[in-house]
Structures are given as C-alpha cells and as structure tokens.
Image (cartoon, rainbow over all chains, first blue to last red; front, side, top):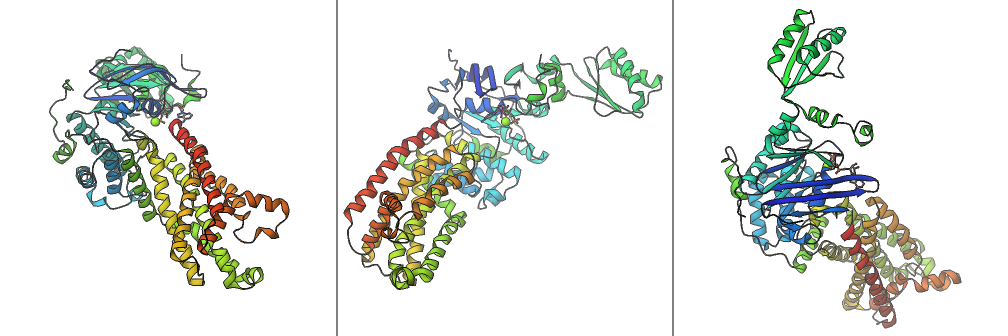
Length: 327
Length: 280
Ligand SMILES: Nc1ncnc2c1ncn2[C@@H]1O[C@H](COP(=O)(O)OP(=O)(O)OP(=O)(O)O)[C@@H](O)[C@H]1O
Ligand SMILES: [Mg+2]
C-alpha cells in the first residue's frame, strides 16, 4: 500500500473477525486530512471494531491500514503518538475526579506536574467543567462525562481523533455542546473520524460519510451525494381511518409512481420520493377520493430510509434478523 | 501538514474552547519510569477515593487476631499473650497476601470499563500501567501492615527484634507481595469479571494461608499435611517474619522466600505482559 501524505487514514481490505463474526469485513477507506469523516451504521455494524483496529487497539486479521502515513501494525507506536480515541463507553476513571483524570493523562503524555495541572485547568474551563473539577467522575451527568472524555482525548491536541458515538444517549443540549467541540477541533486543524447511528448527526457534522452495515461499507460520499442516491426525501401520511389505507396506498403509488411503504402504525404510510412537486398533486388526489388525511410530513430521509434504500433491510434490525434480506 | 481543510470560518464556537485547542508543542514522551510512577500515583488516588478496599481485607485478619488470641490462645500456647507473639507475624503475612488479589481485581475492573482502552492507546511504555499499579499496591500493603502491627502492639505484641526487626520483616513481606501480585494480574487479564478474579484468588489463597504455620506449629499436623506446609512459600515467609521480629536472622527461610519471589516474577511477569499486549 503506497502512502499518501494528504490522507489521515487509508485502509484496504481491512478485516477483523471474532470467531465466526466478521465484524469488519473488507473495508477500503481513504479519509483526507482536515474536516470530519463519519461512519454511519446501525448497532452491530462494526463501527467500534473498525475504529479500534485503526486506533491500534486490535490487530487486523486481514488487509492493512495506514493512519497519518504510519502502518497500524508495524508502526503502532507512531500512530498512538498522533491520534487519540474517545471510546463508545466513557474511558475515564470514575473513581477519580475530573481534574485528576486530566492531570493523569497530562503526566502520561509527558507534561511535568505543574504544566499538566495548568493544562487540565484550561481544558476543564473550556469544557465548562470547572465547577465539577474536584468531584469524582461517577457523580457526573452523561453529558459532563462525555465532555470530560473528549477533553481527556485532547490533552495533547492529536492530529486525528476517533470519536465513537460521541452523542449517543445525550440530550439535545449536551449533544449540541459536543457538536461545538467537534467543530472547534476541526477549525484548529484536527481531523475527526466519528461514528454515529444518526443520519442527522452525520449530516450536520461530517464532510464525508461512509455507511457501514455488516462490516462492509455500502455507500460513501458527502451527505448530499448519499441523499441524492436515495431520493430527495420521504412523504409520511397519516389517515383518520386505517380502513382506507389500501385505497391510499394505491392512489399514492399511482400518482407518485413509486413504491409505498406501509408503516407499523396501521394508519400510516410513507413513500420515498424523488420529485417533490408531485406531492401536492398526490394529496389532492387523496382528498378528492374521500381519503381523510390527518397529518402529512415531507421529511429528509431518515437513517432507516437510507438503509432501506441501500440495503433493502431496515437499520434497526440486528445481525441475526437480517441475514435473509441481505441480498 | 500542508493541506488546508476547507472549513468556513467558524461562527459560534466558544473562544475559550478554541484557545484550549489551538496547536501547541507536544511535550517529550514520558519516560518508562515516569509513566510507571504516574500509574502508581493513580493507584494511590484510588486508595484515597475508595478506602473501603483496604478495610474489607484488613477487617477479616483483625477479627481473626482477636478471635484466635482470646478464644484459643490460652489452649494453644498456654497464655493469650504468648500466643499473640506467635500469631501476629502470621496474621500480618496473611493480611498482605490477601490484599494482593486486589491487583487482579482492579486490573480486571479497568478492562471492563473503557479506561484500559485509553491507556493502551497512549504512546507510552506499555508495561507502565501494570508496573505502576503494582507499585501503588505496595503502598496499600504497607498501610495494611501498619494497621495489623499497631493492633498487635495495642494487644500486647512486643517484638524482640525491635523496630529494625519489624522494618526488615515488612520489607521482606512487601517484596513477596509484589511478586505474588503478578499472579493475580495474570488472572485479572484472563477471567471475565472482577468477581471471578476474587473467586479464583480466594481458591488459591485460602489453602495457601491456612495450610501453613500461620496459626499453629505444623509439627502437630498429620504427615501429608506437614509435608505440604513444609514446601508452602507462605510457611517460609511466616517463619522468616517471625524470626526477624524476634530478633534472629533466619537466613535459609529468607533465601527460600526470595527464590519463590524470583520464580513468581520470572514466570508471571512475562506471562502477564504477553496477555496485556494481546488482550482482545
Ligand atoms: N470482543 C468481541 N468479541 C466478540 N464479538 C464482538 C466483539 N466486539 C464486537 N463483536 C461483534 O462484532 C460485531 C460488530 O460490533 P461493533 O461493536 O463493532 O458494532 P458497532 O457498529 O460499534 O455497534 P454499536 O452501534 O452497537 O456500538 C457485532 O456483531 C459484535 O457482536
Ligand atoms: Mg459501537
């Protein structure tokens, strides 16, 4: 594999297996330096495993990868010197205080004691944790813990940072705080490689997105490109009378010219559409035929819809449930 | 780096945040020693924040000391005071030997949380996390030893070897505990949960500490048991500690203890390091 100076990460045919599970199943990747690169995928897709291999925590079982030009196996220590990892589950010491956690990492990274303390104070301040600095981390809220976790990853600002599901489980406010941190990181020159289960998050943050499923990258591109590939959005319709769903399905399919999806809610249907202009026409057609619509929405495609379009199976399905659908 | 990321000028990004993030010179890598000492410091912080660990394991030996001395002391050695002179060094060894299993327990806890991943992703001398934890544990052993000795002195324990004898025996004990802790570190890397570390360690430590000369002179035991007790390193350690505390220098016993330490470290330190490197 030839190395390319502008690439933060490049992988070819990367494989990691756990017994019979092929958690990462032949990933080819090339991530440019600068900006945010997103791994988007449902539970069990292999996001965490891919990141742990790239961050040198797991040896690959096949293929290879270079991170910032260094081979992840032969030059693992050089990689570790330039990247940092914020794991999916808080990777700070719960028994210690926020301050102690950061000083600990500062010392391990080579700062003398006073500088480590100064740096820790600076980071706690920047992440709005000064008041909690002297408290044990086990008393922190989810959002505070996550911020401390990210702070711990940038005691020395890395050239590349891996963030594994940085916002899963956070409320909207905490999530926005983490997004701001990610943007600030990028603006100061760090490349961010993050994983997420939310299309919305990938959309907001990532310059490029790789959609991962069953250990494989099934689509890659900017969020615009991905959305274009699956149509411009979805029409969601809710009926007053579930009994009319059959009629509604037929009418929508005729006017929109696309397949209509029956949701689990017996009164709801949705359709992926490529042409928004026909929507008004379709709704008019419904009312003319006496189908009463209580609610309709024209939305961006959800992750579920992206998955449906790309793989033919819904995103929330877990490994075992999907084998029969995966064509 | 020569590339300029195509990011628009950021709006709304907090200035303190940006200031904390802007590029800075990287400190030189931490030396192996400094990284190990830093991990040792972490272990001390743990003792400070979670002192229960220390009391859990010392409460039991304290109970044993009180019970054995006052209940059986008279019967076993003629008087409680005399029995205490015999028992206390043994209890001291037993206490510290029991505490060593927390090394494996803590290591396993770290792994089951995410902290371990973070440490392993740092550009540091890899064994530092283990060496540091073991060094920190030495402080734990010292504190526990002090507690047991102070209790003994209060109850009437008077070591003929004086302060020097006590210090020497504690030093020997610490060397042994440090060596034994490698065994539990290896166990901590192999088994799944912190509680099973405890289970496995107990299963080994109980026969080792009770099947020794901690409580009674092995001469009264059946031959097969006496043979086991005779080769048990705990027996040698207890005898050595007893000797040092009573003012003699039991060189052969000390020699055997050091041989046992060397064997434990030679076998388990490399094994543990191997397990640590290849973990998951
Ligand atoms: N240590 C392990 N041992 C065995 N199997 C594993 C291990 N780690 C992951 N797996 C399996 O590998 C597959 C991918 O898991 P991974 O954690 O990488 O997914 P993920 O995309 O991060 O999912 P999530 O969104 O739930 O975090 C899953 O089927 C998982 O069960
Ligand atoms: Mg994951």
